[in-house]
Length: 375
Image 1 (cartoon, rainbow, N blue to C red):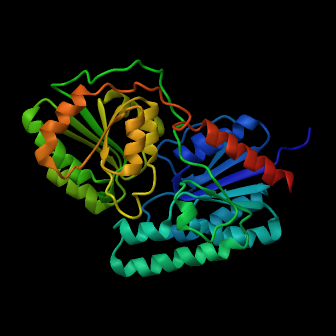
Image 2: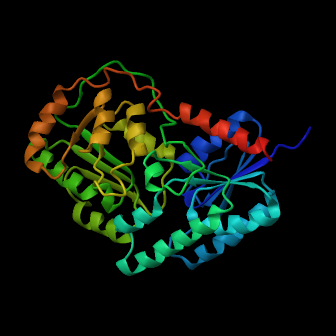
Image 3: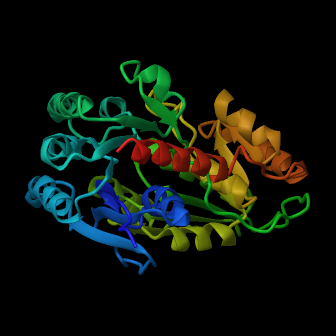
């Protein structure tokens, strides 16, 4: 029996059990039963055992750890060992090594563009201003080096088509929900006196956590039994300290913050127990044109959603309806928002193919078929 062609999906800062790498791209590849799949990435807190997928950890520790400089060479070692037919790189800093290795290993290279890194550096407040210039230069250099070797791009957001006009050979494969729950009939909020709110995922300032906490605390004055859970990966140590110091002992607030990404299953279990999913993203140029994965997932799980006011997001939330878009800074309107939330009939329309990964999966599987058939 002929050996299956090998595929590598590789990242630096995404854990090997990352939602997109493993549960979306990885499981979609495994489903075809045509390839030998290897996922390379960050060391997970608890690496799962996944049938027919090899998980390879090549980095752990803080983002600023000097050992990160060795990651491209560890990546090269895996490329030489596996001899893949296709390599899917999901972070810019692996592109130069992929460009070099492709010269003697002759694989097909796909760049999964999950972020507009230049915009993120400029607006997401994750590094000092003096480092931004260097970081933008490194991103530009890596992407320019890799461009000549990239056979195809995957764009995780539709807005990247206009934001990155230099990319011509691309397929838009959005980060839609690969999770679901049994469909519930139309419902209203069942916990009007002691609602449980949750903020989950990557916990950073641009997520809008602070305005959302202040909004909740204002509501808590009228509803003293209300609860807010904040759970997820908090990569900025300064922000972790700020949240812990200012709100760690605040009435009704429970913090579960980690310096490592938490598992998809753990986050889902926490979201399922809450009444209202808060998505208080700041409307920065690096965020406002994207559709957060948490929005897709929240609708897939039929959670009530309270989200920042944005016409793009509002059109999605209002469709089902899944909740409301509000201004989290307008704390004087908290009581009227709460009354409106109580009156809404949620999910009169069942979550449809606009929300789920299924259609994206078919596009991705077809792309791989096209790429490998030209080898």
